[in-house]
Length: 305
Length: 155
Ligand SMILES: [Zn+2]
Image 1 (cartoon, protein in one colour):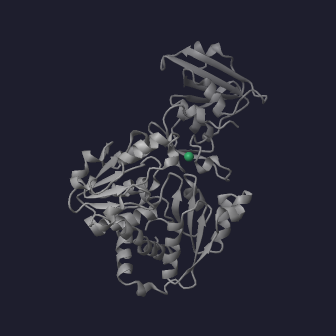
Image 2: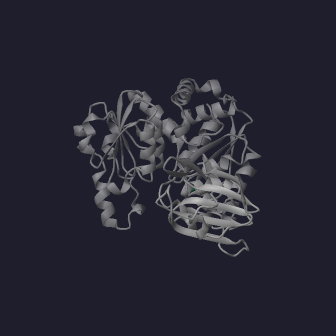
C-alpha cells in the first residue's frame, strides 16, 4: 500500500483495495500458513469509545497471526479519564507496540494521532469521519456475493452520521458501481461527501424511499437510525419504521439481492430475512477477521512502500 | 502609486506595510487576521469604501512599523484575493507584490466543527487546504465556503 497508515478509504486506490481483498482471500483459504507469522509482535488497541465488535475482531486477527495485543482498556479505567491527550497516549503506546489501532469520538483523530507516531496506525473510527477497515470487509463481502463491477448498490439509513457509509461510498467510487443513497431528508449524506463523490466522477443518486430503487439493486446495505439523533420519540418511530426491511419489503427485489448491515442491528432487518439467501450480514461480520489479518500482515510485514 | 489621490485619504507611513485593493468591507477582517486590535503600539490607518479603478470600492490598511510575513500575506489572500502588499521603508515603496493563494494555511483558522480533533485539547495546530472556492479542514475535512473571516483565530 502507498501509505504508512490506514486513515481513510478515500486515499486507497483500486489496486490497494484489491491487494487487501486478495490477501484476505488467501488467508481465508489457508489460515494455517500465517498462524505463527507474527509471533512476538504486539498490536496496540486504543479505543477511546466502546466498540466490542471491531476491537475483538482486531484482537482475534492479531492472535490468529500468532501475535499479541496490548490494550489501553476502557476510557473510564485509563489515564485518559485524568485528562491525558490522545497525542500523549499514542506516543506512549507506540513505544510498546508494532502497530496501533485507534478509535476516537472526534473527527480527524486518527489523522492527528498518525502525526505523532512512527509505527503503522489503523483508524478504527474517528467520530462521524472514517472507518476504513470496516469498508474493506464490506467490500470483501460484496465481492464474494456480487462482484465489484457493473453493480448497483443501495445504502440506506443514517447516512449523515454513519462513518461506515462514508468510507464505503469513497471506496465504491473507485469501482464501476452505481450508488443509491436512501434516507430521510434529515439524515442525508453530508454535502462534503457528496462533493467528494462528484469530484471522483462517481455515479451517485439520492432517494427518500427504498421502493423507488429497490428493483434495480444488487446489494442493499442497511444501517441503523439512532434514536438519540431525534429529540422527539414520535419523530424517531415514524422515520425509523420507514427504513426497516422485512420479507414483504424484499418482494420487490431481485432474487439475488445481497443484504448487508455493519451490525449490531436493532430492528432494521426482520430476523425472518436471516434464513434467506439475501442475508450476508453474519458472513460480513465473520469476514472482519481475515480482512484485518490481511491488513495487519501488510502493515507489519513491511510490504508498505 | 504613492501620488494616487485616493491613497492620500489615509496618511503616509514611514516604515511598514500598505495593504491595498482589499475588497470593500474586508478591512476589519484584515486587521483580525494580522492580530491587530489596537492593544499594541502599532499605528494603523484604515480607509474603507474608497473609490477604485480596479474594484468598485476598496479598502486600504496601513500598518506602521511592521512588515508582513509571507505567511500572513498568504492568509490575507483568503479574504482579500486582489490585495497588493506594499512594503514601505523610509516613505518609499521598497517592494510591491500581489497576494497568492497558498495550497494550505496553518494555525490561523479555527475549525467550525465542534467535534473536530483540532478543537479539543490536543497539541495540534489547525491546518486547512485551500480550495478554489473555500477552505477545508485537513483533519475533519469540513469545507467552509462563506464567512471564512469568522474562523480567524483571535490571537
Ligand atoms: Zn476540522
